[in-house]
Length: 556
Image (cartoon, rainbow, N blue to C red; front, side, top):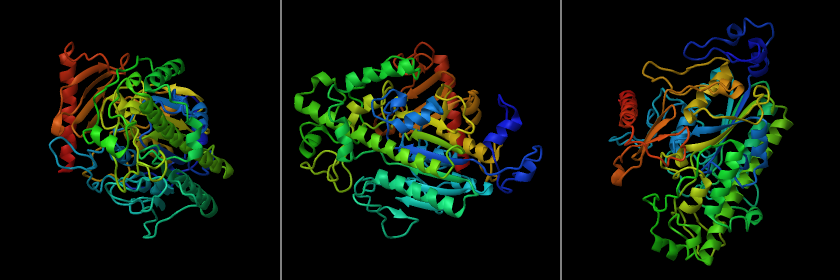
């Protein structure tokens, strides 16, 4: 691997050990390190922290107004990616993070005209915990799963959360996760009283780290901490909500403008503010009359101008955003506890920490599971509220649309990388496009000391499409993707260089017409150039179709 410092010094600081011989012809640690005159100690640890439905600009270090001192500290001492991408939805993103494939490649999301929705992964697509075993890693999972199989069967040594293969309808209640289990035991697990799932997930993470330090301190660990926060329902501790009681009374239009100004000052974006897509909402949202009868007159089904809301609506909507902020605030506090544990056990400097959100903020407005009590205090256990399109537009500022869509608001994710032993460019930004498919190659690079490691590959396995971000993190080297590809429920997109074509699905998930944007100066996707450059649309569309054909080939 190339780096600005001497190779020997770089490796000594970053890769302080390897595991045994792995699958697919991997070399042993003795052979890998034979050219060095020092003995390896222990490989770097890896901690992946994933938020759920957190907006691109929610955190302070990305221009937001939610107090996130612990994420700020990681960003100030690490690097932030400004053009990192998710898949736009919960379960495809988790599949990409843990397998290194696009979800459609490994049967975890549908392809056009194909009935696969959330199926079982092929044997050639194990999750990261299994891939790390040849390097001596112990792996732990805490929180949301939303992948096929179970964490234990997929290679994790310990696990806590919901292990449902498909939908997780009533498992995401923050004050009563009654169907969560530890290590697939039938009895639910609760940690303390009162119970709040964000804290419980952090408790389990810390318990795993303590257990690892006590029983196997000589081995590296992979900890995957997947919070539900701030996914609906909007549930938060009252003491956290109180911090933001009057913070959002100015409304989503003012907040969007304020966030954009701060993001430009920070250098995170250089585009203008996207138009509010007033009447674009998920097709499965409750109709407006149902919202008024089941929730109350303060609920608003559209992202209309804030000035058009009446006083009661403004108060109710500001309260909803205060709860959303409280959820992110609490998650940040729990991240701080996890970081403290790393420091207490002497592993902070030698741990690569990656923080991201699985997709953009959600415009969904639905009620699931045991329902909503209209008389319950907003944010309390018996309430069931969703952020909705108005505040989702603000949370994803300055980008267009929301979770589920393949426009930038749905697929843009914050990504913070922190690793004191290796990342010396403290507080810097990385503007090159990256994707969740890059996480597996990055972690395998960290674990093995080699780029392009492809263990557990069988004869029928397609090559993983991602690239290691390690040189990008440590040196600012361009990631160098030829293209990045998306598809979800009729929404579709592909990006090649600065050009991106994207299309919203029509009724019955039929594909809409391609739009073309130059993201170099129009990342907010406001100037559709499709009519002006049909040749570029044709080129990118052909590449998108070729990827679909390639994915289908390996699923036969």
